[in-house]
View: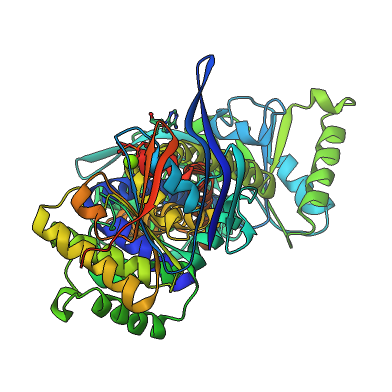
Length: 407
Length: 230
Ligand SMILES: Nc1ncnc2c1ncn2[C@@H]1O[C@H](COP(=O)(O)OP(=O)(O)OP(=O)(O)O)[C@@H](O)[C@H]1O
Ligand SMILES: [Mg+2]
């Protein structure tokens, strides 16, 4: 039997029962589409978390007061609750450790902000001019904090675009206006550029004031809530991180590093732990979708077994006129694989479109990768092979006489 | 040439053995036209399945053109059927939802004949059984009973077999249509020298053969040459 003949047989068999074939294909389509969609959502989430983390700066090391914790738990550990870091620590890091591009200490807290009757509640960050370098902040209009502002403890503020939207409305240049932070009046001297990214690491919803002003008028003490250090390049971050740890341990007179009253976090560590979380998530989503794919495969097997039973006489007839086992086997096997192949192709198109629509309308970030498409295609074909094997074998082993006598 | 030597077919039904065929021996020369007759359940179909290499005997030997067929494997039997034997059954002869042409070409597909030559060979067979060209592209389930059987005969012919086996080919037809079908067999026998073995329980049908074998309870009770009705 020639390949062309087998496909002709397959086409005629599948098209003679269009509804049943389509429903069976639908099972695979749903399975494959959900694999593609869920994996792409997982990968999309992982991508946006990554770019969020990358947007907070580059080669960044953050030193926070308090107990040493795993990098991942930093996110929720209430930075700045403990009081153990001072400006002098930041100065020591800047002067004693090499391989550093910039150091910026900050004192942050949430305060009530009012301006022209509008009010909001947001993070106010007391910091230094180098903060802009360390955190990759750019200025949209006006200027960032200057050294002069720090020395004078001036009541000036640089606000983020979200704060501007809340207080003054979109597209308004707030420079020169005044706001009240905790009832103290501040003059706005700059507006930062929008960075995007929501939640953790978003600097759009922040107000920056001189660190000296923050310590004197807002926090009322000499402690800082974190020290941001930018290393010169990616390779040196872990060395710099170690040196900072050693230096601060010595400065704070702590011999046992497990008792440290501060913790350091490397941006790369944060990234890798976030990645491992999102990877697990993606795998979990893929596995859930994989279950529906298996159900689809069982549907194929069910249809093929029904079809073998229904066509018993046909099989007997084909054998009587010279079909060998392998001819019958190949015929039914090709039917099963064609079903999953078609289902796979349609499922990929559908999954792809849904992922595109989700992303296009900003519902979710879903990114379809070539590897997930190949995986889905491979899996659907494999399902055809696995679930088509048994029915085809059963058909081929039918005894021609039993098949002919079958009622 | 066909030769059966003490063929028995035994079915095990529970404890006891059931002899569907018992010590059947006969010879059929090339070019004969034999009718096998007998009451229902006498073993006619069982015998035909063995003669047609669809099944093997439990005991005894069966030679087809000098080759011992009784010990062959499944796939070897398929090869014999493909090259030497054409079948016509009583019912379910044709693939439903396939055209007449495709049905007739099917044995050529399994024989690995090139696509281009298939149609020519099939057309020749269809003309030989008196089918008209405008029927070639009808679907097989749109044919009358008589047409269906003639398409089945054409399909049995298409591989140029030396032996054509028919199991009650007129069983579902009225007398007149049955006559046309049986005359088709007769024509193939007389004009092309095909060996034809035909199973029937109708005396009128058997009259067209040159030899009639009667079986009962799996045994031959009568085997005689007759005058062929034309
Ligand atoms: N697989 C089987 N198992 C047990 N007994 C069988 C089997 N196949 C056939 N038989 C028995 O063998 C006997 C002969 O059957 P067969 O089909 O050859 O009869 P037949 O002469 O063709 O009858 P009919 O004219 O009704 O077609 C019957 O009694 C039948 O019940
Ligand atoms: Mg019978």
